[in-house]
Length: 316
Ligand SMILES: Nc1ncnc2c1ncn2[C@@H]1O[C@H](COP(=O)(O)OP(=O)(O)O)[C@@H](O)[C@H]1O
Ligand SMILES: [Mg+2]
Image (cartoon, rainbow, N blue to C red):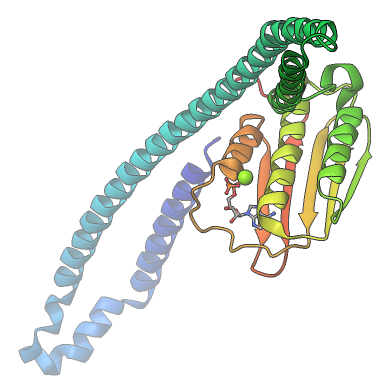
């Protein structure tokens, strides 16, 4: 019999049958009822001789009671199993949705970055070149117009800088050209320049060149959000970022740990921010796990494990 629960039920039933038969044999051998009748004969007024019938009814009643409870328990288990399977389906749907949402967000960001570069960037360049021409032409003859043209050139440079920063946020710079390690090194370097008072350490072990794009972009975004949070909330003096690809072919996975020694926070409390929630959605969409460890005064640590399956992030 395959079902282990049924096997236990059968074993119990056989046990009950054996004990009953054994009781019958023993009672028959020793004439227990006759003995009891003799012993209780002087106390006939207590009606002890009616006990077997009463016990028989009690036994039947308890069997009826147990059978009803057993049926109820089975119905409840069936209800719970069905609720669990519905929940599992809902979770799978949710993960697929999160994955699609993240992919859509990335592709929109990519398109926006391209548009900024190709449209805005090109037109800005043309305006700047014209302004440079006008500035140089009018240098001697019209000093006032020359000054205005110089201002246009400066403004163009300013907008160009803003667009470049925006494009970098929208599309991880160099992820395609430099690979994850190079792109992260480059990104961390920009934060070193921005936050010279903080020591930023980046270390990576393992091969990150052959990861699927969904994982690469997620790792980059995790570092991006974590460093933005350090700058916004932490008042830290040291931040360590470590990425590790481990596990070999069977349990291939990437682990990320980003820790700072700043003011920390009480994790678990509801917040208005979407950064930590977004990180968790990204990691969960790839079937990974993300944990935050922190308490006031104790710094903040983020740790994520993402499996690298052949079809990582694909729908089940
Ligand atoms: N490195 C950190 N150090 C201290 N507190 C942090 C850190 N990262 C996040 N937090 C806390 O967690 C909250 C939620 O962060 P997040 O979801 O990224 O939202 P936001 O950055 O927009 O406030 C922050 O408001 C902050 O209180
Ligand atoms: Mg944030």
